[in-house]
Each structure stands twice: as C-alpha cells, then as structure tokens.
Image (cartoon, rainbow, N blue to C red; front, top):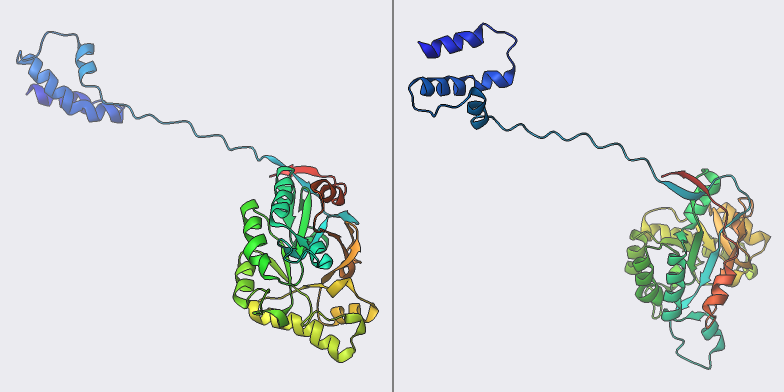
Length: 311
C-alpha cells in the first residue's frame, strides 16, 4: 500500500520533470527498504546522492570559423605580370661539345633548386588555361603566379621533371610534338596521357617541329590543325594552347591558329607582361643551362601586386 501511495503522489503532480518520473521506481524501492529497516538512518539528501543518475555532458556548439584571408591577383588587370618559363631538357648534357644542347639542358639538381626557391618564396604554378580564364572569365590568379612550360615532349619531362613538380605540388604545361611520340628520347603516348590525367596541361607544338614561317597553306593545316587534332584524339578533350617551334611565327601562322581554334600561343619573345589581345604571341622567360639560381630569380621580374580576399 505504501508503494501505491508514493505512485499516487507522483501522479497527482503533472508538473513533475521527466527525470523525476524516471527516478520514481527507484525512490519507491528506497522508501520501502527504509521502512523495512534495511537501510542505515541517513537524511533524504544522502539517499538521493547514492542513487542519482549521471547527467550527460552537452558541449556548447563550436563557433563557425572565420574564413582566412588569402592573397590573390584580382581580375581586370591588363597587362598582368606572370612569368612563363621556357624549359627544354631536364638532364645533364651528355655531350660537353654540344653547346646548343648544354644551353637547352637544365640539370635535375638546378631544376630542383629552382622549384625549391619558388615554393619557399610563395610562387604558385598555374597553367595557360588558368591565364586564359583570368582574362576570359575574370577569375583571379593566386599570389605570385608562374607558368612552367616544357618544349618538345622529351622523355626526361616524364622521368625527371614530372616527379620533382609533383613533389612541390606544381603543375606545368608540356608542349608535345605528336609526330615524335613513342620515339627514342621522347615521351610515349601512354606517358602523355598519364601526365595529362595528373593535371599537366598538354599544348600542341606542330606535328614535326617545322619552321612554320616557311610553310605553305597545306603544310600549315598539317602542322597546326593536325597536331591539335592528334592530341585531342589521344587525350579525349580540347587542346587550346600552342607553341611556335623555335619561337618563329608570322601573320599567316597566327591566322592559321585562329582558323583552327587555338586560343593562346607562346613565343620566345622575352618578357613577363601579358594581355588578352596578345594571347597568340605571349612572351616567355628562357631557363638556360648552367645559369645561376640568382640569374633565374632575377629573370622572374617583379611579382604582380595582390589583394586580400576571404578564403
């Protein structure tokens, strides 16, 4: 009967909390034991302290983090300063008597030192797709943008330059001559597909590395449109950038690029400033074999000023 009385006491108080309702059976048992003389004589508070339920810890919600500001080159500048570096071989020149080969060959250790310096000093490697998007789509560039281009599709781009680029988190542009693929000293078709899949931009560099200023209309179709189409068939996506062999071009050559849908092209004209109107004759900075790191740094020019935006 006493147990029924306790239950009635709870039932008559509709404002009782959910926690008290859960404790009711325990308290009924405790009261019954006390009345039977089976518990020591303790105050009610002591009884509750022995049978209190743990209260779960509810943490306060974490504040939403404030986005960190980052430095960018804002859209809308023309010209914009972006060094486009021109590399050929990344190797130790095998023939000391070959002065041209020496000038075109940056040793792996020198190349790594250049990439180390760029990384430590806050440069961000971009592609020419990114540079076009800066002008066409008004997309800002990261601070200290730089384009690393490699002419001719030599095998050492895959075996030597590519792993160093990946270790630094850098992308690049590889200008491939489709007629040279799968030949000694050049990349294989599978290697070109691999680097493309890893984020390297592939650009066209004619079918046979011909001097386009001496080409007639039929040969321009073969060298310009043919190289673009061959690479697009291999890669399965548009190829929109081109590089003039030995930097040679004229009005007829530029017109052929426009005709066949090329959107940008690089030369061997020196400089780091670029405009959208000049996108088919963008300038480059040549990396020469044997140059000091200080000379390489000086060739980059003054970095474009940046602004802070929310990250």
